[in-house]
Image 1 (cartoon, rainbow, N blue to C red):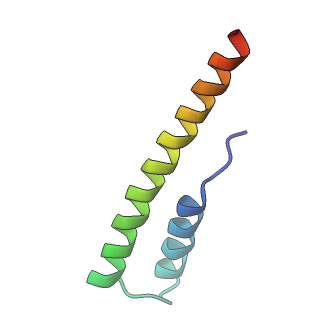
Image 2 (image 1 turned 90 degrees about the horizontal axis):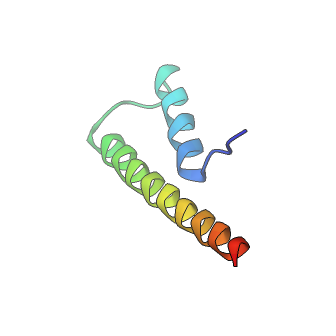
Length: 60
């Protein structure tokens, strides 16, 4: 089972609050969501890199 990164969890939480009308989908929220998406991509890349290093280390 894949674990979710913190940025993914925050994004889902914000989406839930938007769906319940706790938050408005304004420019500030769009900017935050964009930054979370970017951070999530960076986290995924770092995780993949760490896993690749670990796999390479296990082969040696």
